Image (cartoon, rainbow, N blue to C red; front, top):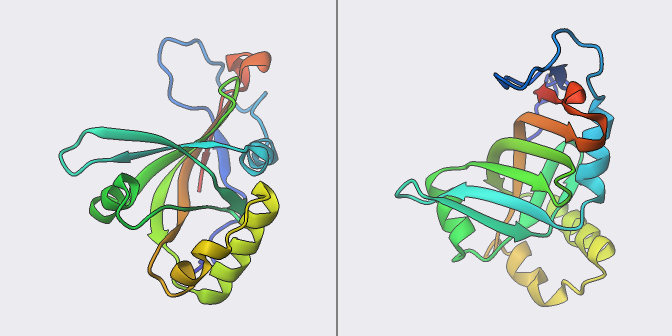
Length: 171
């Protein structure tokens, strides 16, 4: 995965399209991108939605990392998630707290940069206090994947702030 230096780090905020919900027009009350990034960074568990080759949805809870504008997660190469992403790289990730949800739609790509993989393994170990050494060789030899999700659009919904703060960010 490569980072596009021309891509803005700050996505554009607007109202999500939610007919019938009475959302206000205009930008007043939109949440800053930092609100979503705080939740994406702090969440312990995440929901990952992928699509099976026959079109049926698949939803699973995973661990992951939000770093430098991308979401990273590992999975076994023979897992349903990996098989789904091999057929259709489009997916959705959401934080564990639905009352303050950050939802990111994007495209997943397996990481092949060994230096980045080493950084991610270390970050995983710190965040989850989990010994990654049993998986390290397979990950660094690209036998088991770590994926990066490159966001295309994200949504923020804060139940306490009402729907008036509902925000969509486009990347």
